Image (cartoon, rainbow, N blue to C red; front, side, top):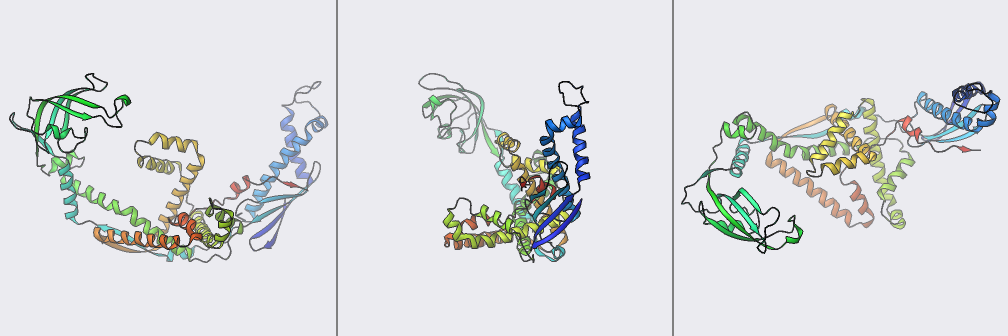
Length: 477
């Protein structure tokens, strides 16, 4: 194989590949030997069909398969040996081809620009740690204790009031008839919370142990028996006990009931919980600072085809006229996104960052936890949509790159209080809102805001092999 590189303009290159007739013949011979044992032709024993007969019967199909294989193998090899990373989909133009001939073709490719990532180590960003005041932790634990009171059974003469726990059995009817789910045993209601049926609790105020009380309430819109929705039901309630709330003692036993080892361990867990409530938002601020710094990096030239692809994404849903008016604004946004993506991708490749299956599954599980009750739907979505899984893999890949940048760059470490964290986050939200309102006054930039406000950078896949797998059909001349 002989390869000649010709620079056309900027990042555009023509890669001329020549394969001699002897090499092409060896590919053809291998293919004929492969099909020889599988062909059954009348008058010939299996594996004994002469080459000329095979050529006459299957020559065109054999050559087509061989040509596809040679183009794939040699184009990948030509690019890899010459360290050319294509920015998108190369095109192949056949010059000389055919059975019993040498092969010559030109691979037209736009090369990715050379990226210098050395300056990444000089990036400065704020790295926040929230220092939790012990009083904040104590207050949170007191709030938990308040919401999980202990109840102690009261005397038989005690009348129920708001805040008490009433234990009751009931049978219910609608129009004098029972229905599915019309009975309940040892039902516990904390009066005042109104968690059973609207207005039910109020009617139990004043009852005592062993009382019988008829309570009326309308069955709600989400009641399982649809024909009974909004109908008035009568509940014959037998009061089994009245229990009074007791102040919860915050001690080691209380902590153990919440899953901690002891009270000290519970305080550590609650402090971490409060910290984590702010960590994700503050980490996003740090990430956005890093991405803004990457936008300042110099990249000599950005491939036009990548810019065009990004502009199409930005202008989705717009009329041709509006898209044309907004093209200049979109072009600026597209260049920033692509440049940042190229830098991150190059840094990831240089540091051999990969996303393994375990990390991908962990991210899917994280998505499931964010949508309780809809786990099956979310899992089905990912199983049926490989592109969604690929997008998720890209998200994990980007996060791993950002985390490595944080390790190698120059963090300005700041320990802040909870109040300071809230102030910083509110200020950030205010700035973002002001920017969005400013852009909304410029209709041509409205889509830009929608697409870019989250500062998420889309990484481009630039692996030579994957790009060539999508190579367009050859143009035969």
